[in-house]
Image (cartoon, rainbow over all chains, first blue to last red):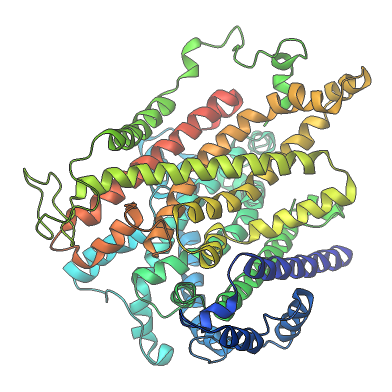
Length: 321
Length: 297
């Protein structure tokens, strides 16, 4: 297990470095000097040169990369071109909204999807089993932002139970107010996420229900619940856990779009604004933080999978294959 | 999923992947799922095709009154700029399909080539490529798309490029696994021993064995691409006007959802119809490609 941990951690580090290279190159090699964002249309060559010098885009690429990497290691994400404020603290203040939104949605999605997926598999032949499968089929075809729009229309504009958008100015000082404004966004993301999760849980459960070892255990006189509890759940959990990591990352991404629907001051709004303004430090900083988060989630999901499935522990080769 | 089962259907001399086993009932080729999917997706394709030949109004015609309800003059009413909603919807179908098909083509070709290369590569090259793919996949498609749009500015081409690139990593990883699985089979070793060249192994053994699974996956990716385009457009990062996009239509109609509900509902309904249709086609194809799964569905 220790060898595996070390290998997997090394893999994490390498992927992270590679991701930094990709991020850096994508933003630098594609056409357009980042300095243009600082300038108005009729800038003189001297002004362009000054701007390039100011943000360092006149220096050779490897040097720029080294500088940027050095900054990242010291947790300095640079300053916004537009507001000239440091990007790091701004991202941190936005995470106060995005992280709870992501985690709450994810937990709700799992809490809904696991029992529903199990019932859909266990009662596959009945009308409500088919209904649940049909609903999840519908759920994966609906864009999250549209679900959000419809929920706002019904629960905020018509029934007036929840606010249509926004977030308290003092963040979590009043937890009830904060939770109320997160309620509709959380339900939106959870609805869409659980639809695809249900399909995974259902198919994992179906595989276990049809397995020989479960039948054998039942033949030896165990009750269905007992057999499921001792052998079924753990086997069904293996593929589900591996997908949970990806789903958590997707939830984070879903949050980026849904935040726009509800005008939440999270990472998503900051990113969309940064893109519209060609504010490279902001874009780079946010993508850096999200990539880091996604890679960490993958790492955690791999570890969790090993804890559940002893068969994986014998294999040495690391990495999500 | 199970290359071994298809060995008989892909003998070197005469690949006959179409021939069903003798005892399989003929009607199993066209399941109800596949028919339903084709009907739903076909509906949207028909609308898009019609938009090429005929539109009720010109795309940029703002002569109508603002936010008109559905009526004789404008069948579905108008948007907040006085544009005919039906016209916008029809163009939106064309844009959704263009971005969907374009990115699947791009992602499919790139992914297939990269996946084949990684599948045939050994040890360190394979490890490097897989690690790169893992990172690309860790990078959520929509984030990658936003990054590319940020650098290239929002356009139809940017959307296709962005979504297609993100997709290519997923296709490449799947292709790699499938190729490895085929190459591990005894009949490939036998074929190599009898002097078949690697290019011929690819065309005669690998491709016939992996295309059913790939096709199913590409169909699913088409649905995801359509959804990604809608999300990009909703955020204002999709193809700019005069290309009408369902995502942007929904965004524009959001503020007036109570007074003019048609504009906030119709594009979403068409979007869902298209994606469900494509997903059902994928499910139907999977049943055809791998009959052993049918029991468990």
